[in-house]
Length: 396
Image (cartoon, rainbow, N blue to C red; front, side, top):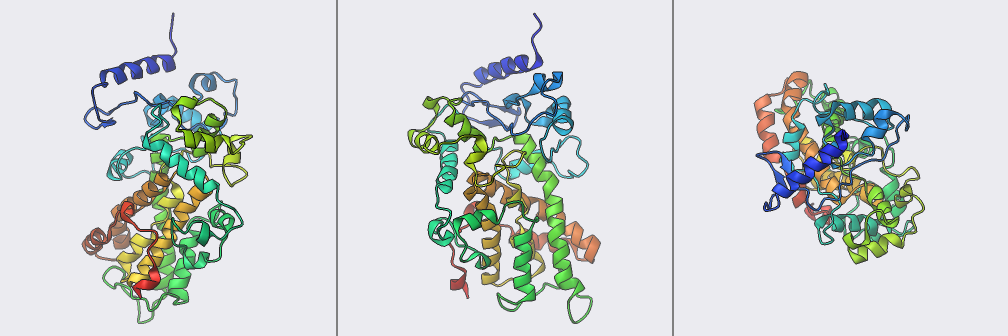
């Protein structure tokens, strides 16, 4: 009897898992083999094939633990790109916009994410629980009150309700809120006097315009563009399922009750989900690409690169971080991202921009590549260490 390639891969994966039974590592960097003993095998599948009856769709869908990274099977990659509604599919092995090693970037930010597991005490379930708790917040209540234990809101978002907080990051123009921060910082002087670093971004004349707000607008758009293909490459490398996918599998019993912590199980079944997308605030649910790392978060890196080309005051830097973090965390409040999706995205964006910025400033603005590189190293920070409750007003 001839076995399908998917069945063979499952058998091989199970055999490898048994061989690793004595190992405590969840990702053996020397061999590239992952320990999947308790993994439920649930991966991102929120898309539809254009032709469900095609042989390819029947053979490869739904995707499971053996189909990620998609770059390891060009047939899976081609199916996703050409035969499904999956969005922003990036195959890191072939994509021409990917200039850095995505596997290396993933390692730099702490490794791949965890997934639904048979262990009801695993950290993954706590992350999903935080998303569920955020969805339980009252839409019409003040975001400052309801989310006050999680973060300080940016000044532009003061007075937002919980609904408005999550809706602020619903299909908005990429980088919108960081652009508004630049308007307040440079155009309106809302955060005090500004000071450009002339060694990182030299003047053209005594009064800045081209090397002022125009350069800032250009750098902001550039940063989103250079980050995006790498971040989407990481998404399709790890294949983490969206919270709505997992929550709905729990609600419908596809994930067995015994694997889920009692409190989380009760919270999800109490939501009365009629369909998976009902889990989120957005009518269409989550986007049709994997959850980790969050792209909204990866695009939120103005609090890094702005420090390189300007000399920010503590208050200015604090507000820039508040904007980046709020854009990231609002996606969890909306129910479309786990909290660690956000931190991974924030760190991923910073990692990519720090690599690309010295050359970009050198080529476009004749900046000193070595100066920008050294200053960038000094301005790097880890979002895992960030305190989202910091009061910027106390730094004046």
